[in-house]
Length: 253
Image (cartoon, rainbow, N blue to C red; front, top):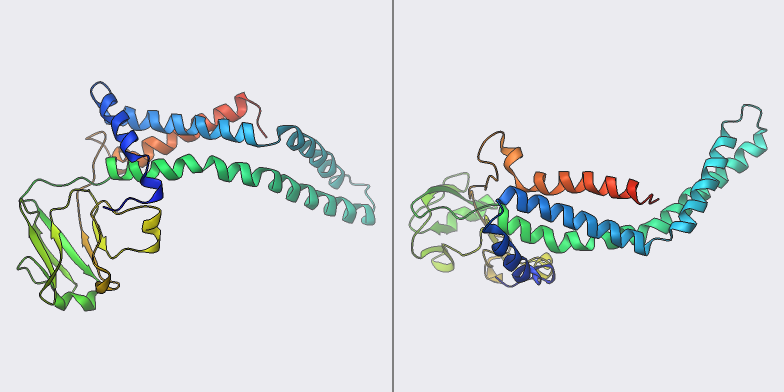
């Protein structure tokens, strides 16, 4: 794997996660990470946003909107108040836009790592998996070991214990198993400068060819509906609730 810019803190995150894993189950670790990122984001927003100006704009907006609901307002005054309300809304947007974007930066570094760590998992050798070639028209030239894809570009083949070559027109373009739990292989794309593929990359000569493998998803709970065991739920939901609480607690606009 060639790491992208957002993958650079991943070794530090791995170190922290391994230390916590000795005493804290996965679902609680993911929840803690969600709470920590939510708190960091709200701290950044509070520090970077001009709360004094935002409160002033908020007070003006309330007065203007109250004026809009005046049943005795003249038409010319109504137009002026409507224009003023629009200007104030745009001013509010301008004041919060940059601070809000900055608060998303921690997410951009943490989400790829969480997906790699708590998303798909590498199966045990011998586990039967569905391997698919996309686009389908390339499937006739691809072999997964000795297996030939069907008319839909898919084939059932076990996850190998040792090297399983994936070939295109007789040339080896990849070998399974790979070390990262990623279910797709493709040539390097522009977004891989930001987020690397844990499974590695196909050579550029394959063009738009992709190899998809239906890797099993990790469940943080082991029971209940599938969505309840996914890391994304336990990261986003507690973080969202905590973010709303801190915004109310700190009276942020």
